[in-house]
Image (tube, rainbow, N blue to C red; front, side):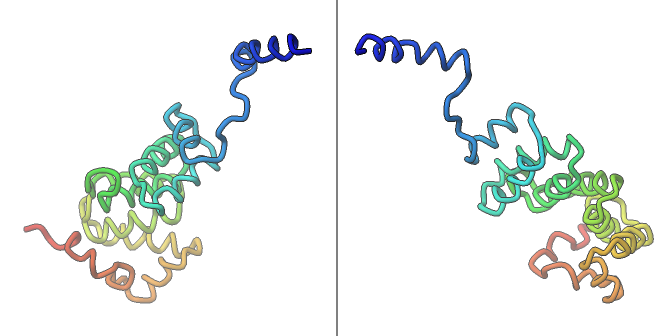
Length: 174
């Protein structure tokens, strides 16, 4: 019997190589990051970026969101816009933020339409086009996005939906 146990213990590394990792790390942030580094995406993986950014790990969230955005997940596109517009996990880059939001808007995402509409109204990261911006906000409102409806009711006064702490970003640079 002892010989069988010894033989089984010696064979364990060979079995692990043949059958993969026994008891893999499936529910940790590192597991999700490893999947993202391999270029994998999926609903659960993309959604985990939200928890990462809310926990303050913006660089890790950026890794997940960028892969997911490139794979067509519009929610990840709007999160990339948020990260770029606030310099979280990377440089402050309003041009990149507007590009992500435009991509989400072009794909039909109401949050992308709202965000890109606001960028157009401000001329933040994109050439100013208030009429086109309002039209996108109207589309988002028509699709039920409550904050877009709120902006409409406020006569498109952007102070209604923007924290005054962000006013420095949107001031004219002339």
